Image (cartoon, rainbow, N blue to C red; front, top):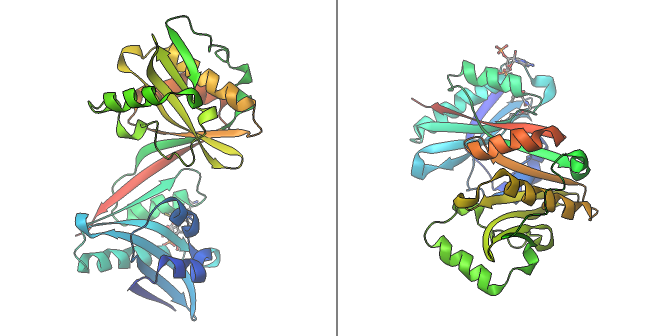
Length: 296
Ligand SMILES: CC(C)(COP(=O)(O)OP(=O)(O)OC[C@H]1O[C@@H](n2cnc3c(N)ncnc32)[C@H](O)[C@@H]1OP(=O)(O)O)[C@@H](O)C(=O)NCCC(=O)NCCS
């Protein structure tokens, strides 16, 4: 016999202390990456005084919405309907609290993807939408790419290592941004604590900075390529390839073997560039999906 409870969770610190092994994706890692809004709502499945299933939700009362951030049933108890019950109780609990929507983000490489998708469909969730790809590669994979030496650009273009940027050039970029020059997520100055200036590359045209590809360190063996931006008057494939080629070569001189990037599937230019020039050199490509349900 399984008992179920919907409760306001203990603090995230306490959940990690008591139940980390019952969280998926791992709550500790998630809490390190994102500021989660407390208190979480939790739905528990308890059998013979043991927690066998746990569903954790981050509530966003300002949007009357909630997001599943962890959902796990222990392996010996799977495929017995516990996950279904947890989701049904969550719906009821959220409805009582005045929420009208719940969503979840999941990845194509999760072992339970098929079970999760079946479960969501059976509970009236809308068809999932692909939102993003996450791609990982060893940088040595690119050594055979036909464009790997495209980093010798003719005048008036010039590549430079980001650590050489001057205070005046920084100011010029910030001034141009006052007119919305680049989307905020492509800000080259973001996350400066993880930024690897010596492994990031900028592009100049007649001495003026017109593009960049930044690198952040996300783990001892992996860099993240972030903020790939080219001014709209200079969106030529050879310029983009020059940035890619130089940034990969800079990494090849280090002992950091891997790099990853994420691309939103709505960014059609970047997706096309990825498909044409980068895809063949990746070790893994993971799709990220988003699904939602209106609660009524
Ligand atoms: C996802 C999870 C919570 C589901 O829990 P559960 O208690 O097994 O769920 P249920 O028993 O209610 O339903 C599972 C359904 O998936 C189906 N299923 C299981 N494996 C499947 C597979 N490989 N392909 C297709 N369907 C599958 C089951 O048959 C069942 O459907 P049914 O009720 O129509 O027979 C559980 O698999 C789990 O903990 N996975 C690991 C963590 C995870 O990936 N969580 C998702 C985080 S968002």
